Image (cartoon, rainbow over all chains, first blue to last red; front, side, top):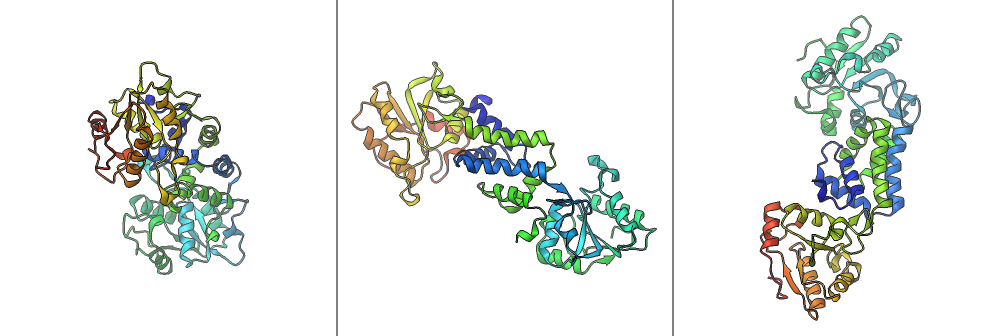
Length: 206
Length: 206
């Protein structure tokens, strides 16, 4: 099959692109040849932006979202309500909730959900640091905004059990979002309403 | 809108990815965050493969396909028939024809088709060098394998007029491929058959 590529350099670049999610060989070839037609400084800028992100971006000490500094812009913002924490799976979910313009609290990025099938246990996620934040006594409410899947429900329940001993209100976002869908792809109106209409968490998975 | 990205490094990398064809902001964010989760050496390998391709890959002196050396593997192969040249739009098309395993001649990559609407004139394409190859008298047949679009037909006709004075057989690949479709996406059987059933070019656009 490698015979088909007239250049090993091209083949290598295409093979690197096919490692990205949802990118097959034809798409990878088109993307790579598109870059090849660009000026060298544009290709350098593309290449440099990725390597700089990897080398220089850090995870926020408070919420584990990606950040240029030790503390992300949301956690560093004094006008945000630091007594309300919205718990999300990943950074895309932070951006999705931010886009709704319905939320003035802060975040906590778990880095995934509990999934024994995929080998993800609670210790692989940022759950201890969430409990640490609650243990300071400065947090009034935790809003669980995980995907409405079995893994999301399991994670909600795990966090509920861990936080039972603390005097903190626990909510889940309203299930306006269809069951099985991912938070990241919800439309802004539905996601925004689900933040406003959050309901007390009773430990049941609905 | 930039408010939404918790990191300027992330935002920059996402914005570089959205410059690629068919990559919107959500896809770009997913791809970039996927890379961010990789080890640094993997990200370096990705980044390096693109920049090396841009800096080190050259275009074959003969056929203008991409190559690691001055002459591409097809042109350098003595068992290929150098008296038959298949004229294609781009490098993907070379790979598509190679994949059919039906062709033992060599190629000539035009780098596009004549398209006044897009500002592509004959002088922007590798047409002069094609005529130069024919002028050596060593070429018996030219197979035109351009997309069956108006621009492809115009380019076929332009090449036909330019080559009329030479003693060379001019063919177009059989139109087994539906009109309006791109060569690059044709299935291998159809594309292979269209190479075998090529018909003499009469200067008419069918």
